[in-house]
Image (cartoon, rainbow, N blue to C red):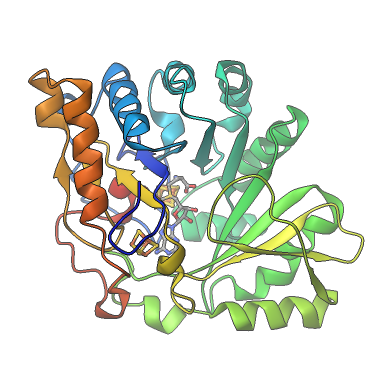
Length: 326
Ligand code: SAM
Ligand code: SF4
Ligand code: SF4
């Protein structure tokens, strides 16, 4: 599908739940999160039907995200159902990794090939602060499980925050010297939970890159691992893994945007930063045919803005990041 700015849109990020077993400071508020009622969340069959419709409209790649996708019951069945849609040639998952040790095996069996795991620090105490009580050792076990099962590539997502985890950058980058991990440093974005402080904590990619090169040596351009994200990739000399940078703030990768989002309650969201959505759940539940559902994805593509309006901060009063899927 081409949008009005001639970008090819072939990637759908599906938020499978708004629930999460962590409360990362940059993504969710500490408390008082109003959860979507279970009846309003799409069921597995409904998500699979919408993915089928999206595929008919031109979507080829799907990522399951959340909230925390692994807290959704029946996730492996959902992976298998999405995998069964013939036109979808890639299915991936973004997770905080906490439940991966227990679930990675069944997910792989269901057809999952690769996984992105979020990890912002190697210090258990800081991890508890950032995630508001998460246990780092579980995530690390999750990473080892994913590597051991041959899920490939295993990508690590690290959101960099000044004065919080910027001292961890070289340590996390150095993981690529020991493991075939693909670490991606992500610029902090102002979203509902971090709108008031993100600007003060933001560290641009240029600074992160300079810190790594200062501490660990030159970064040489590398081939991108499988996937179709906006990261630029580099490699430290002799490293089995790569280092990538995702720069939504300093580099408006919107001009290379290839994505739509589907929220857990079945709204197609043309842009992370625009509040506009196309309701797919109501037509789905009243029995709309596949062609009508596909047209909703085309309609959402035509609503895509040329770029985000992040400089105005997060203006969507209804949703926080965990409800959209990052
Ligand atoms: N729970 C899963 C996880 O943490 O990987 C999947 C959902 S999470 C919303 C998806 C990604 O969004 C994570 O890598 C997270 O670090 C990133 N993210 C959340 N809030 C962010 C923010 N304010 N700025 C940049 N990235 C953010
Ligand atoms: Fe949960 Fe992921 Fe958001 Fe952290 S970033 S609160 S793990 S959804
Ligand atoms: Fe695409 Fe919107 Fe993200 Fe820019 S902010 S890359 S237009 S979804």
